[in-house]
Image (cartoon, rainbow, N blue to C red; front, side, top):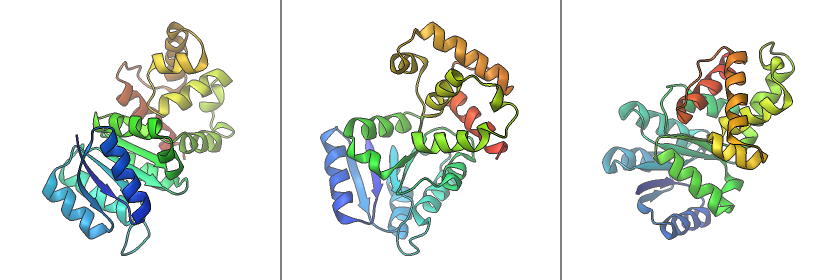
Length: 217
């Protein structure tokens, strides 16, 4: 699987290259600036891009904007964005086109190799990988004031958080130590209460939940 990596800190970039290569990924470009990222994405046609939000020359959201521009040129280009802090605006921008193959992780997650590699693979396969802290903040900001979210039980909120991270019913059942049938029931209840169409497609249901949360901002 071919990867374009963009990270301006040399030590972190080098560490990510080594980690990804250890798990069988091919690093076709490891760059440190926005212009380099733009060229690499346009010329190399990677299977997935792993991109730091803040890159030179602006050190604002250069990496994110380069990735979004590349997705406009190539709809569905898998992009996993890395950020130092939770920035809900970045998550919303990434989700705005409604396509799959997207992820948003805090940089702390890269030190957990299993979690990071799972996120890269999930995004490359067209799925979604959202950082748990982003999901928790989205939910906490709305749970007190939103009428529909207020109808969810505490267990349904737990399930919704895990769904929004991109987890399947089986994975949620394992984490919560319940049956997959119980999770399927919770999922049906969640979609019914939020007025969303029930879907067995993991990526579509995650995007639907996040789109709903974004509309109720």
